[in-house]
Image 1 (tube, rainbow, N blue to C red):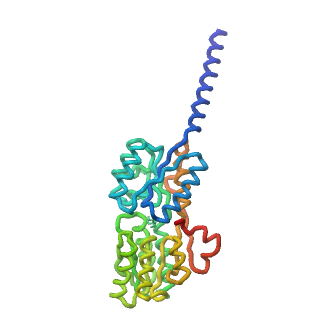
Image 2 (cartoon, rainbow, N blue to C red; image 1 turned 90 degrees about the vertical axis):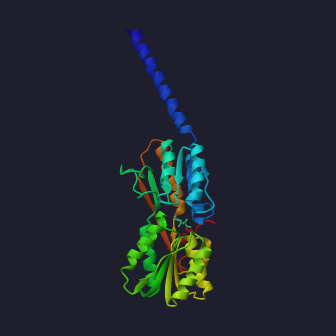
Image 3 (tube, helix red, strand yellow; image 1 turned 45 degrees about the vertical axis):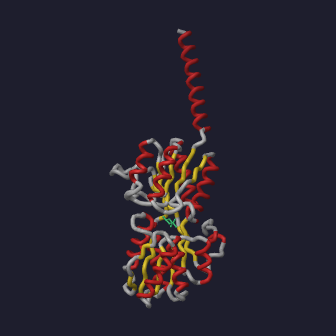
Length: 327
Ligand code: T6T
């Protein structure tokens, strides 16, 4: 009997040593987390990468940043496939289309790679609901884009004295973020009966196209009062178009996103308001959420990040300027 008790005690010690070793190994594992942006050459995603790198450093993970040169699902899917083939421990991705990225991302899910979407979403953006096809990502980490669109509408309405014609310069339909900004903008504009919202102009994320569209809209509407640039390239293009048409200060511009070039435009009065997102926060919480999941914690299915509204009077203040995007 004594012998049996001794053997059991020895076994228990052995098991606990083994368990300790496994736990130590799990902690020592260096996780590889991939971040696939909408495109690589956009200050928004470059800033997101900065936040993601900071989090990766804090938890000892390796961050792989790989993306396409343009915001285009046809170019993003091969990048995703290449990342899946490398079998990272988790994928963070800004899907460039709500529908077209569903099937390609299912491959990651089927391969057992956890998926978190950052900035943009697939399907409805409501994840882990059991509702169907596109709810498999673990979490959606982003700005509240409907609210951002409403904020833009209020700022533009104020700038134009709540009357006149305005339009939205947007990327293309099917992108969750910019679709929601337009939706929020139009919903809020219903509160301003003196404002007419003209047809949206889609520029394919090409600021030159956005600039020439602005001039065409102005050619057809000499009483144009304002424009909302619904993302970085739309806003830059709209502002350039206003300048080229000699309408600085007459056609008012509200910009979504805050790269240094837009901040320059704030200072010269070409742009009235810039709504800065907090992309570094999105990247930081993206990596932290992936790490939490990989180490056995549950994570929220959605995390909302904030905005900072910039104008020429506040943009030099350090607490505001910290949100200017990195180029
Ligand atoms: O506005 C951001 C991002 O939120 C959007 O999804 C795509 O455009 C940007 O990257 C700015 O260019």
